[in-house]
Image (cartoon, rainbow, N blue to C red; front, side, top):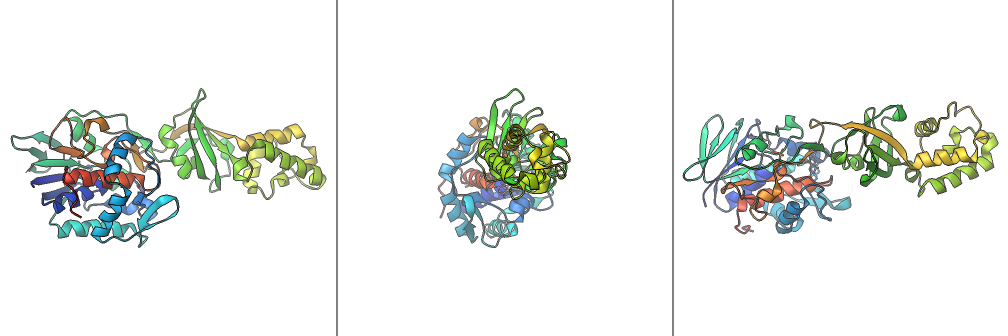
Length: 406
Ligand SMILES: Cc1cc2nc3c(=O)[nH]c(=O)nc-3n(C[C@H](O)[C@H](O)[C@H](O)COP(=O)(O)OP(=O)(O)OC[C@H]3O[C@@H](n4cnc5c(N)ncnc54)[C@H](O)[C@@H]3O)c2cc1C
C-alpha cells in the first residue's frame, strides 16, 4: 500500500485508479480537462465498444498487447465490469458494449467506483514534469505533488479536443524513454478526387487493399467502404490508414461489391447481358441491378466512356466490357494523405513497449513510474481493441503485481 498519482483520467487512468484503490493504495487522478473520461463518451458512436472477445488484432505493439491481455483480457475484464456493476452485451464480431447502449454508462460506472473507493480526482491540472525524489516521485503541475508511484495514462495525440494533447509523451521521454514516430491511425484516407466525383455518400461492401507507390501490398481489408468528397472512409479503410502514405494506391474491388468473385465472372455476366438485351439498353443500363447509377457512371468514366446513358450497350466490344470489369475489380485511387490527429481515433507509435514490464507496466528505466493505454506504442483495429488495451494495461499498472481482489 502506498500513494499513487495517476496522470490522465481517461480509460486507462480510471481503470488504474480503481485497481490501485481496491488494493488499498491512496490514489489521486490528475486530469487536465474540466472532467474525466471525455473521450470515452465519444467512443463507439456514443455506445462505447469497450472490448472484443475475438482474436487479438493489434497492428502496432502486438507483443505487449498480447502480454497484457493474456493477463487481463476479455474474461478478466468481463469480471471487472461485473464487479463494478456494469452489465455488458456482446454483438457481431465479438464487439462488446454496455447493455444500456450508452457510453455514459461506462463512464458513470468508473466514476462511481472511484468515488466509492475514495479516489481523489483533481481536474483542470496539466502535469508538466516528473522528477525523482529521495522517497518516490515529484509531479509538477500548477502545484507540486509527491507520491510513491506514478502511472502515466495521458493518452496519445488523437482528438486533442477530448484531452489527449500528446504531452504525456514528454513526461516519459524526459526520463529517458524512447518514442517511435507518431502517426494518425484509424482515420480517413485522402485520395485524388476526379475518379470519385459524384460518389460522396455511397457505401459498398468490398475488399480494399493498399499498395506502395512502387508496388508491394501493405495491407488488405474487407468491409464497408464509404466514398467521401475528399477520398474514402469506413472501417476497412480506417484500418488501412496507419500504413498509408502519399503516392500509395487504394485498390477497391467493386466486382465483389456487386456480388462477383472478380473481373472474369463480372465480364461474363456483362457480355451475356449485352448479347441478350444490348440493342435495347444503354451502356449505363448494363450495370443496372449491380450497383447504383452514380457508381456505374464513375466506372464507365474510368474506362474512358461518356454519354453512357444515351449510347447503346450494343456498341461496346467484348474487349471494352472486359476493361470495364477489370476496372471494377481493381478501382484504383491514388493516396494524397490521411486525415490528421483531429480526426483519427488512435495514435500509431508511442513510447517504446520494450521499456516496460508487461506484468506491471512499470518502467524498466524509471522504477516507480508506470505507463498505460495509448501513450504506449500500441494501436489496435476498430472493434473495441483500443479500449480493451487501455483498460487492461491500466488495471495491471494499478495492481502493480498484486492479484485482483475479486
Ligand atoms: C471518436 C473516437 C471513437 C473511438 N471509439 C472507440 C471504440 O469504440 N472502441 C475502442 O476500443 N476504442 C475507441 N477509440 C479509441 C479509444 O478511445 C482510445 O484508444 C482510449 O480512450 C485510450 O485511452 P487512454 O486512457 O490511454 O487515453 P485517453 O482516453 O485519451 O485519456 C487520456 C487522458 O489524459 C489526460 N491528459 C493528457 N495529458 C495530460 C497531462 N499532461 N496532465 C493531465 N492530464 C492529461 C487527457 O485529458 C485525457 O483525459 C475511439 C477514439 C475516438 C477518438
